[in-house]
Length: 152
Image 1 (cartoon, rainbow, N blue to C red):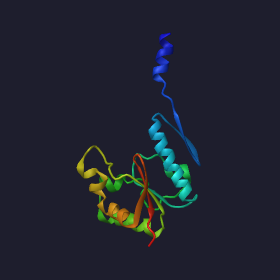
Image 2 (cartoon, rainbow, N blue to C red):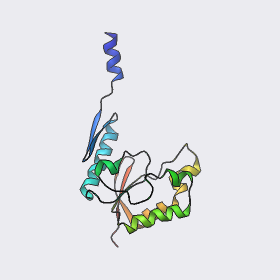
Image 3 (tube, rainbow, N blue to C red):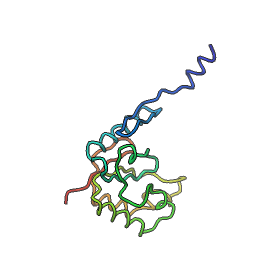
Image 4 (cartoon, rainbow, N blue to C red):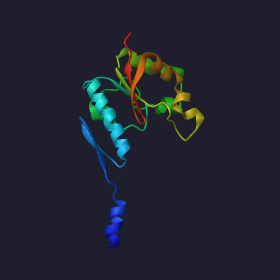
């Protein structure tokens, strides 16, 4: 009887998140809903092979799960956060715009070790300025903020 109770307490229900190229199992139902809505947005507003830019390091592999391409050299923004430079940020912005990246998954309030200089907004203000100028936020699903390219 105690083994059954321990097993029930240990086991956490898994909530499925379905993507065109895979399934994720999450233990938090709200996170699962947020991620599913994000994946649905990506698949409804882009096509396979399109460019998609993802800023938060905590996001699952959205490129692989949706068969979208990263428009920048950086597969994550860890390097520009840890070793920031204006040149890296300008390159990111240049790539986003040159490749016509239509959708960006963003969350500006992330960083590392609660160190003020290793937070996205402190380390990458030019990327944030680029997103504010050229994109508009159209949906928010928890820590997944979805931006689309502004019509110019």
